[in-house]
Image (cartoon, rainbow, N blue to C red; front, top):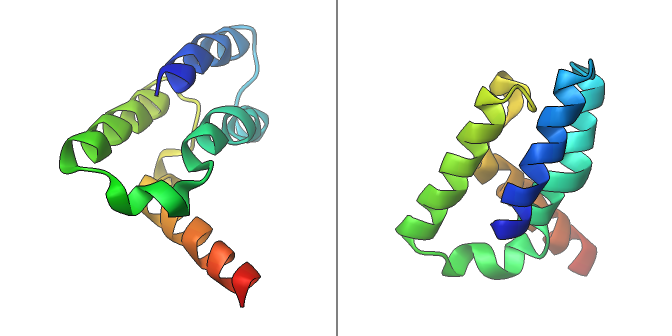
Length: 91
C-alpha cells in the first residue's frame, strides 16, 4: 500500500497538467492498480477485513482524485478477474 500511496502524487500531477479521461485511466491501471493486483490471487484470500478496508479506502482516493472511471472500478471484481485468469492459465 505504501508504493500505491507514493504513486498517487504523480497521477495528480499528470491530471493537473492536462491528462484526463481514458489516457489517465490507462496510466493509473498500468502503474497503481497493477501494484495492488500483483500476485493478487495468492494473497487476496488471506487478507483480513481491515486490510480489504484499507485497499477500498485507497481505491476511493483514486476515484476522488479522478484517476479512474468511477463506474468501472471495483477491486473485488478486478481480483476475481485476476483469479480466473490464473486458473485458466493453470488449466
